[in-house]
Length: 272
Image 1 (cartoon, rainbow, N blue to C red):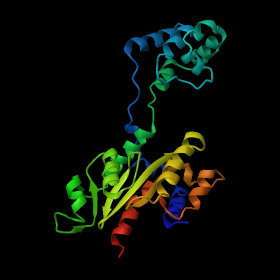
Image 2 (image 1 turned 180 degrees about the vertical axis):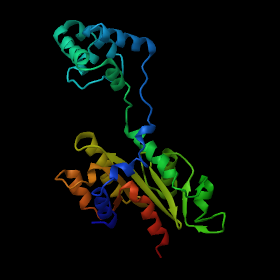
Image 3 (image 1 turned 180 degrees about the horizontal axis):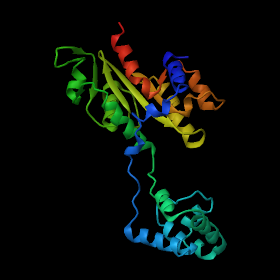
């Protein structure tokens, strides 16, 4: 087991792991969905008048339905279904009218969508805020260190750019052959360090696909002249029998929680 894997497992087992993780993945910064004023008025009126059909008709126009119900998907896809399935519409509508206040229905409809891209941008914001010198592409390529205001040599450099520009740079300069945007790009004492960051909220399905992207398709590949790391957070570090958890515990490659990234960089910049 890699040292950073072990430290991540220990870290996640401690109190306050999720609280600390807000400094990296600040989901509070993601804006809520908007409801057009006219549609909002329809929702409020239908709920107050206790009219299930009118309420469901209005809610289906939104990107976020307020509750999970296996029948909603078909109602969305088949525009006539709401007219020919009155019992289903009545049942779902009554759940919302009798079981919830209209303010709660609206609040659920406004919940922001947290996509993989949004999580990537949140990580990028935290990553670029680590305080290392950020250089344009030409200087980043040529220089192996920078000098601080007080004359101190700084051996870690960061490229000023987007995640897409990170990917394009290492493909050109290091021959890494990456297809997806890159989350971590640093130059440490003249050597490039690249990384993929993922947050896992569950197991299986799309989450497992994301795990394979980060571990199998990125971390364990050796193409290109750069050190690869995986920055993983969430349920992947738990001690369960899930495939993701078992595999991450067997890693000899560098994988860690985002909370350990500053410590990792401190260690490698001082290593001889």
